[in-house]
Image (cartoon, rainbow over all chains, first blue to last red; front, side):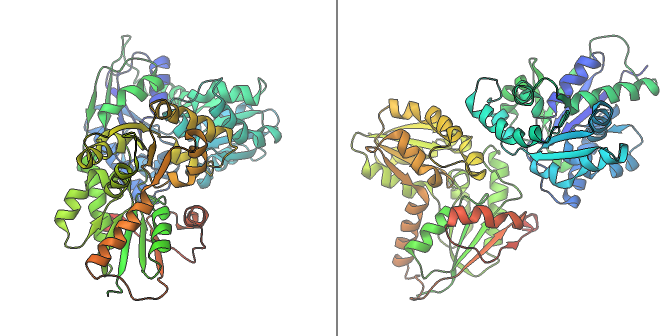
Length: 269
Length: 269
């Protein structure tokens, strides 16, 4: 039993979809969220820069008394997790491996689709992780650069011809390739799940990376006897820029009201 | 007579539409272009962050022997121009004032429309500048946050239902308000001019901020006797990230072939 908080960070606000899953799967846990909105997006930065940013994010998280960290950022998960894990004496979980394990377990025809930002697709990290688990699985990847701006502008609902047209164009090659599992490899994409499901059809299973990370966190806390006692956990939200914009997007990502947000000068960490 | 180069910078590659205009209006001038592709987009950042980025951009430009700077970024023009002008002993021109003077001169019914990024609209800088020129002009502004990602993903041509749907939604209020002049307050927007003209109709004059800045630069260089001698000017292109992506977009924005591009670590400036 351990009532200390879990830290969750992302380059921006997309990681709030992971927070939503953690709050649903582990409702007793306190959560401290940090979104590095002054330096978003991380995708496209050099390894050195990413490592510097990730270390600052972890140092900020550890300025609180926390028991574990979820790296809700795909780019940091694929670029800096080994270093962060080696340097810190607490569990640090990423979003890539849990989703890849789930995909490898679910696919029947050994054809897994991956959609993500251009930067995440370029690293090949998801495809590499899946092949480590099952060398027979073929991963078909597609960068979907317009999905994040569309979601951030509220255009993610079925019936919107703009997002439906873009989704059809992005997803058609994956559908044609016959994937039976599709990893939503960006924390923004769970909001698009209804539109994506409509294009891909009911026989394709969609994998939410935030939900898989939340289940992994639950297993990790259980195995180390670090679960919080039965109660209603609280959440603290921090960003490094434009806290006044937080409420609008956060409401969509979290689907709950956000009472307040704290601004952090991340360069100090 | 002065053969030193003119510096032009933008948060990304949109400023190349201004370079295209400068090369057409001032073909003898050498140009050094910097696109801050590692930190794009600037729109949405706080004033402090924008000022820091803009100062680094100017320091990089001044690492060359230049005679003037064009700030081809609407967000920097509206947020940091007074500071940059006060801190530097060379002409620094933005994209806002020249476009506003042109709009005030062209409008007959004193109703001017402005479309721009959310950050540019939020500052109110265009509306303020126009009212300084002519207090009777009413400015009707509309943020168009999806236009930049759509252009950057090649979706700006008439006949594309995605950009046409988004454009109609953004522009309908301006059309209903009866504007007879519309300022394209972002360097990406000239590529959308055919789509925008289709929605607004032939009676609405569109103002390209890059072209107006190029004319202003010509007047400024003439008045200070800083024009280059009659020759064919050259251009050097620099970006802070992913130079390999430069050619594709640059071709669209510049409408000429780009021989090579240099990568710059802007955090060092």
